[in-house]
Every structure is written in C-alpha cells, then in structure tokens.
Image 1 (cartoon, rainbow, N blue to C red):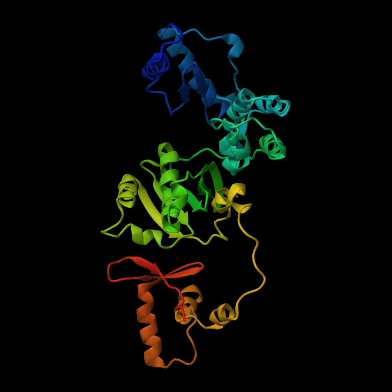
Image 2 (tube, helix red, strand yellow):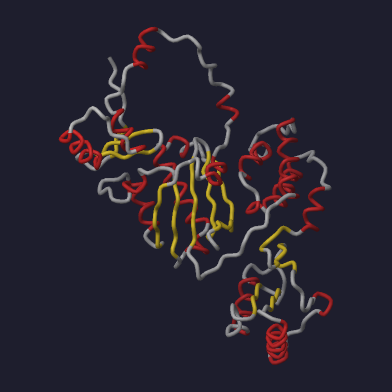
Length: 379
C-alpha cells in the first residue's frame, strides 16, 4: 500500500482485524502493524505466539525480526510502558523532553506542547500549567517568553519526569467518574474501584471559553459531566457509570420539563449512558476539584483589594439571623432547634422535602420545579 493516502491507515487496520478477528482481545491486540500477544502463563504465551505465527504464514505477513520481543514482562506499546503495575510513560521519550531547551519561537512552543500533550492523561491540571505557553500561540500575540512561561515549561517537564502509574480499564467492573467545575475550567477523573481502592485510568481538564465562563454554577457542573462523558465515551459506552459531583442540584435538572434548550441537548446526550449520579462534597472530590481550580491571572490582577472597613448598616445586616438558618442547619447537619414543639418539628421535617442543600448554599424547589437559592431579605 502506498504511503500518504488519507485512507491508508484505516484500510490497513481493517485488513489486520479481518486476518486476526478471532484472536483479537482473546490472546492478541492489534493496532496497525503493532502486535501484542499475551497470556496468563509462559505456556499460554507460547501457544498464543504459535497461533499468531501460523496465521502470519497463512496470510503471507512478514515480520521484522529486529523489532520483535519475546517472553517479556513489560514492553513499550504505542509510546507507553505496559507492565503488571499498569501504564507508564516511556522513559526514553521523557529523557528527550527533559533535555529540551526553552523555546525561542512559536514553532518551538508548538513542538514542546505536542510532545508533552501526548502524555497529558498522566498530568493533573495540564490545561492550567500549559496556559501561559498556549497563550503565545494566539493570533497577533507577540512572542514574549517571560518568567510565567519559563515556570510552566519547567513544571511540565517535572510533571512528566514524576508521572504516576495509571491502571488499564477492566471491562468486568463499572466505572467511576469524578467531575468538578470552577469559574474558568472543568476537570474530570476516570477510574475504577479495585479492592476498595480507587485506581485512576485517565485525567482530563479543559479551560472554558468566554461563553462558557458566563454559565451558572449548576450549568458549569453539568458541562463538566457532559465533557467527561464525551471525552471518555470509548471507555464508558455500555458500562455502568457512577458520576460523583459536588453539586447536588444537578439531579433535579434531569427531571425538569422546562429546561433551557442547551440543558435539554445535554440531557439527550446522557441518554445513551447507564448513569448513576451521587453527591460528593468538594472536600472529598479532591482530584477533580484540583483539576478545575484554575486561576485566571488576567482577572484576579484587575480585582480591587478587599476593604477592611464596612458601613454600619452592612455590619448590622450581617449580624441578623437569616430566615432560612434553621432549615440550612437541618439539611446540612440534621440539627433541629431545641425550642420547637412536636408539631413544629414535624412541619420542619415535611418542609425539608422542598429544600436542597448544596454546600454552602440552600436551594428551594418552587411550584414550577425550578431551584432558587435562598438569600437574606434586604432591610
């Protein structure tokens, strides 16, 4: 097959799958011209290898002896080191990246981000770290490699050197997805729980664009889930998924009959997945929460400093007890005021069904099934 044709890779892959269709995922994995034969024991590996070689002889496939490795416990597959421990980065590629000098032009920035981005699944908050470098790629932006860019460059190299070992998915178990959103980014972590320990499969994060930064908090949390499901669709389709999020109001969006068109489109995207949503506080959702806490220096530097002096009327307003304080305490910690009689306690428990606690805010479900945040009444 000639090189350079746009359909050559797909055609070649279909040819390989047609030849080894009965062996794929049983004793062999095929990607283009890379074959990986595996087995639970040495004898099994030899039997599988014999089957593969016979199939190659029958179909006139020629193997390059110099590129073949037999009976190994770890190997480099598609730029990753595969072993019984899990999936790791290729140290040879990392050593090359480690020796790269700081870029001196836009072409060097693209080259470095391309090399580092290949292993972004191993790096938490990759988008945050690479943001100063990515800003230099914007149109009509003068190339100024300042201290922030140098810090990002060195941080990415250090992250790659100390990249963690991630696990391969086990299709016999369900997946757990942790999602979180902040003002300027969304983060997600895909993993599985094995022996009651959460094992990371893939990290992902994304910086929000100008339109998405104007979304409400609930919409950003919902967007994080949609982004994660689209990002990890190849893993999640057809499997049981538990989605952890620190925004309890999301589950009510799924039952609203008069949602915004944007939310309706997102809800339709969720229909093809077997989802179960669970609430998890931000303090417990540390991994995804960390991925999404991106600092926008351009915004924070323009914000005025906090004033240490407040008008008297503001201080009096703060000292007043909010009308929803008792309900917030009950939803957050199950605390009922001691001065309530039996009938008042019963009424409070019944009214609690109309309220949703999403730390640190209390929401009330209206007659139109919309969630509205409880706020203090201005004097």
